Length: 457
Image (cartoon, rainbow, N blue to C red; front, side, top):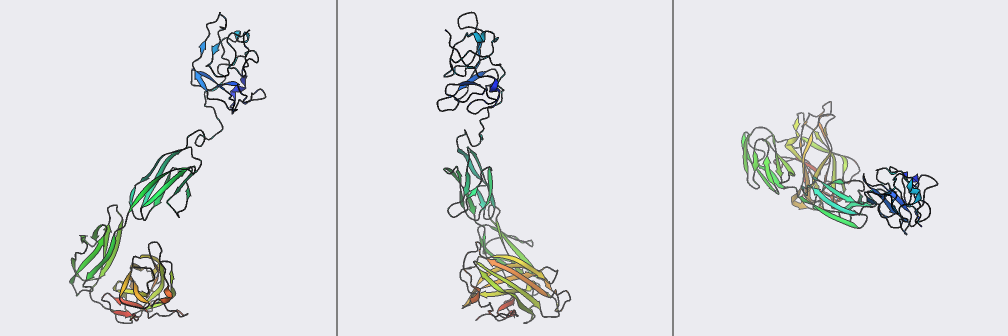
């Protein structure tokens, strides 16, 4: 007596998870039940529900057709052998099927029922899971930085390829912020020092890449001697720098660190800019203004404190005004301003940030440089001084548009705003409540002569 088989009905046309869907006839994932599954064109296949309650992998093969006429030969198309597929060929239910493929549902339960040969679409079976996170082995395929070597302050792009990610984070070591980057494949980073970045997949697997940072060049000094010069005389520019190659504008060109370059004759105030560039294009600049003799008289300019100097972590902020007290216009490039202070960690490697700089209401002046220098004759409260240089022309005193006033609001700070600054012990800090002309903030011409104020010592 031939074994009898259950055949999955046409509900197999639907998408399934652990069985087919499509109505009340749909079988559940019962151990031993076998359903037809999608295969490449020209093949057919089946998969069986395992004891674990999930369907085994689809088994595909090219179908064969029984020759018919003998025992167990009924002309039916045979599917690939699958575990737990019951029954044998030649059942009465297949005889009239005209060779249609059949699939056993539960072994030896009932007569075979034919299933249409095109009952299953060629589309891939949808398991209801995200292919990027399920069924794919979690792995970091690649993690790179481009470029891997940069100059300080430049950017590099971190790129990665991963599979099976449900959690993806990026960090740059202890104390840094952990950044979630799931759903992305790159991140731009800006570095001031060599940094190692770690990409962590699903909280366990990780990879690292290092961005190497070449420091910016350092300019130790850039000066002109003599300065001021005699009328139509020459002077020598000397630049001391490291970490790159130096050039000077105004047609001078390449210069060597520590080697003077003679320029002139000088007939008018001229500002020269030194640019030192490293191998990756990172650069540092400094300026010096060379001028013929034209000293301003004492008291021709005055410094008014708009707001008391403000100190903070790694910073000193100045909010000042320079007033023209003469009946003539004044070229501000002929003077420098000095704020005398006690150093508690500010040092001399400072960055100048110009917050507000203007002459009067509309004419724009400029703070061309801001440096911290050691006082050659240090005293309490003034072992260093901040020196600001300018460009722009002040109108005569009493100009209707108030263009006789140079307004300055600037901050000088360490590269990382590090260090403690207490302005209350600075020589140039006036602890009084009123805003006044401040004699302890001084103005000098380029020969060092005092135009305004009283230096310390």
